[in-house]
Amino acid sequence: MNLSVIAFILVIISSIGAGITTGFFSYTMGKDSLSGVATPNDNPTQKLQKPLNFDNLQEEFKIIPEQQVLVKVYDSIHQQKQILAEKRKQAENNK
Image (cartoon, rainbow, N blue to C red):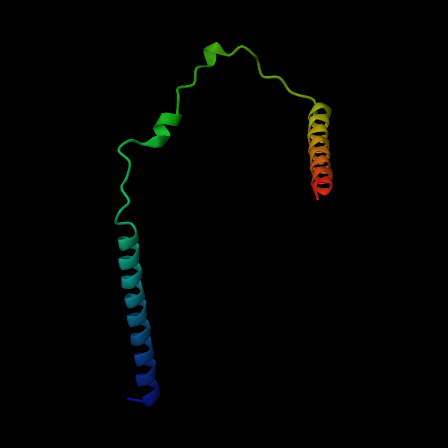
């Protein structure tokens, strides 16, 4: 056999060995890290799901005008900027 073929086979075997070794250590570390963790007895997502009852709806779906949404968003952003400005003034006055 050619020397380069033997070297190639050794590299392939060592790569497979390194992969198996890494997988084993990863599995062992993961198993050890989860040793104290237990699954809950109940499914917590089932507690959140309630049967939908559409018979008791008091309001019908209505489309809100885009202008009204934009005004609310602008007002909210403007209020937040005012609150931040007031906090900055208070921080500067307290120095």
